[in-house]
Length: 324
Image 1 (cartoon, rainbow, N blue to C red):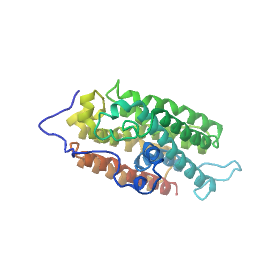
Image 2 (cartoon, rainbow, N blue to C red):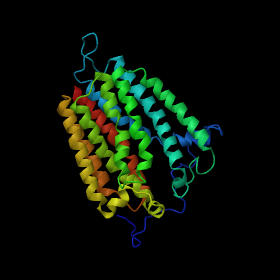
Image 3 (spheres, helix red, strand yellow):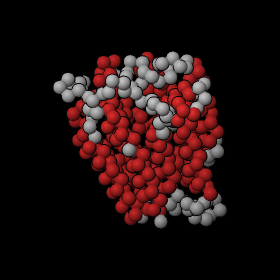
Image 4 (cartoon, rainbow, N blue to C red):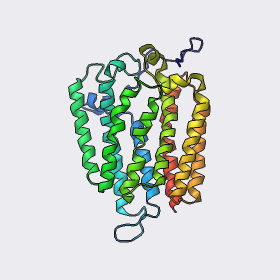
């Protein structure tokens, strides 16, 4: 299971970190707030986007054929639709920050041994575990305030999302596939978004959720290749280490599965032909990732991982035009 080939060492620079140098936090944020803003990854928005996209996809799909309480057909010009997009955006921002804080608290001893993460606020000593915990609770309370504004069914779906969030950081210690558990947590919005619009769940959001998990398996396997050498040394498991040189064909499997499940979800949601045309373009983007990623180049892995923001936009636009 261990992938560590000395004949093809990864192209790791002398100082490889995931903390941007000279970013807006370093330039503009007050010094006392900088560790907390970095803890929440506010200088790296890709995680917020990845958490947000399943929410927005689901909301857009659910609005196709949705009926308001007054019996009128709902559409994207409805203020409620725009409010949900904004509410879920704020929710994704704060809950991603809370999740990062929880992840860094649980992984603080490991992070100090990995080149990319040893400069994070907790292992570097900028803030204590207690301070990070208090910040995490503050962000979670903001998220709870948003959740309480949804219908009762959606509120309970949101509460249930805490389970995969809590267990995810521990999975890399016991399974080669922690990316599956990340997918369970990061794609919960596919269920929550639909529930917020419809007050129920059907097969369409469930397929969207499963497709999101397959998508996460792909992009987070690429992400995990950045740390495979350090992970091997300290005993951290990942799909990148499990797959090794089989990563590229499996990326095709993961991404193809995601596209098929997204297509089935759109079909069950009643989306029109333009959705499927847009999904083809999105599939081409994933094909570019799988076909060109250099798993031995951390910088290229990071770039391909971040490119999933554009994939999210493609699917979201496809869902919007598919409704009409």
